[in-house]
Length: 212
Image (cartoon, rainbow, N blue to C red; front, side, top):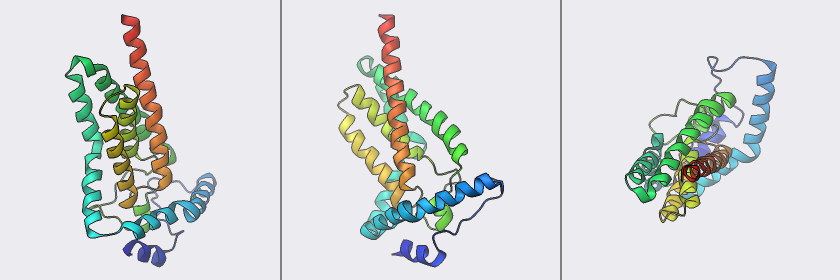
């Protein structure tokens, strides 16, 4: 496959270091070596297995369309706002929007700059998107937002839970297929989404119970 060809040609430990984002400290170099070692034995083999198993023009188009639904959490924000319009589902909608806010604060503003991990498309020079996203890779924001929303729906016993879970899983898979996230980015995104959803849903339920 094209991904495998790029992988073999460039080599697994080739990294496009970005001096503006990294300082050449010994601490960072040790971390970089550890990440490279983990990439060699887990992350890259999984990515390449996915591409080798599913690569096709049809899948390329589908995965781009699916991942676009998760851009900036758009589909989940729309769902949260829609649920806010009805009294019976208002708490669920508010919990989704609060969970998405927590994901943005903890994930995008906290963990991403803290770990500052390069994306697979940064390292490999390969992606099916128009360009490799410029922000750090860890954790996957698309995945975190998707699973935060689906988990809120589960905690609130919503009828929308099952279709939301399917969409969340597809969005997470698309991030791997398109070479913009490592498997460990997606795994952490799922965990972050679960935690943010639980805090948002249970926190708002507690406040609602206190007001009664």
